[in-house]
Length: 158
Image (cartoon, rainbow, N blue to C red; front, side, top):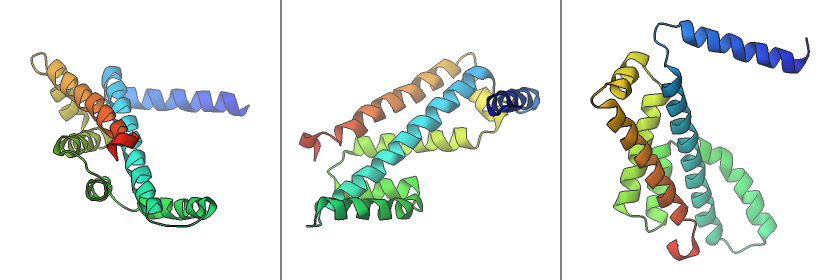
């Protein structure tokens, strides 16, 4: 069997296992889960970049030395929690309370979706009365957070 065929077969077998598990997430919630996890990952990487940039700005040396330092810092930063990184960024940069609140809320969504209890997530996000509002609020939070974190990368925001 060629590697591409095996990969396809393995993907399919994992889909089947997910669909037959009694606590599985339906497709629309798995898509929401993907959005939450991928954007949270992007936010966390952005916080790491901001921490590295702040450290680099305090060091007077050649750019190749700064690059080497950056590569050394990455594994160290990976040991910190999202909240630790947020705390460092909030101390190093002038960030708004709104930014901190949004990042914390995104982190709580990440926890909810990274460690889902399918029944809880299904009840919360598929409830006929409140489910759509919950989804809208989640998507608004991530959309606004995307804008807020991108503003930190603009020269005028530093």
